[in-house]
Length: 199
Image 1 (cartoon, one colour):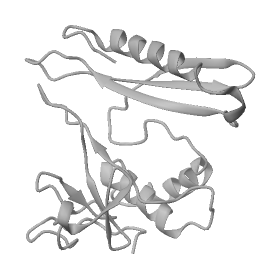
Image 2: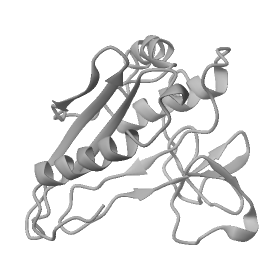
Image 3: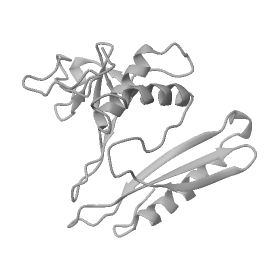
Image 4: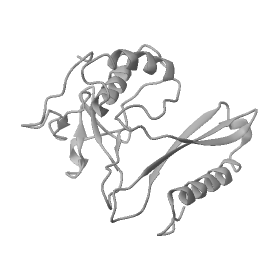
């Protein structure tokens, strides 16, 4: 996909949908076995101002085909949209985490998600968390975090070794604490986050 330099958030979303629909119809229909959702988030490209963010969900099912909707961005840290096979389990655990003193923080959401992946007994989902960051500052881009999960390193869901660590990657553990990628330990002087329900 190619964005125009002055494309609005909505124009870029329309291009994303057009590309998605085009590629989807090239896929063998017999291989599409279940419904799915995609979450698309972008922001204004005004460099001099703090950008506004926009979120959309694109859904597909066998009966109705594609549909899409805009999602309201919350004014406090919290959930934007929950989807996938672990949705019910996550929402139940999130209700517990929201009773803690760290409620309405991004680390509360992440701790809930990370601990669900560590503790669950439902084999329809799992693996290491994947985490991306979007900062509400002028002229900034999104980026992926490295994750320390079960004493191993992951980046965008893939396990990586010490020899290929990029020094520019920011690392987080299951508590959302800043970590050192090579040692997998909390960085010296990094803030210790509340444990709440997580061990």
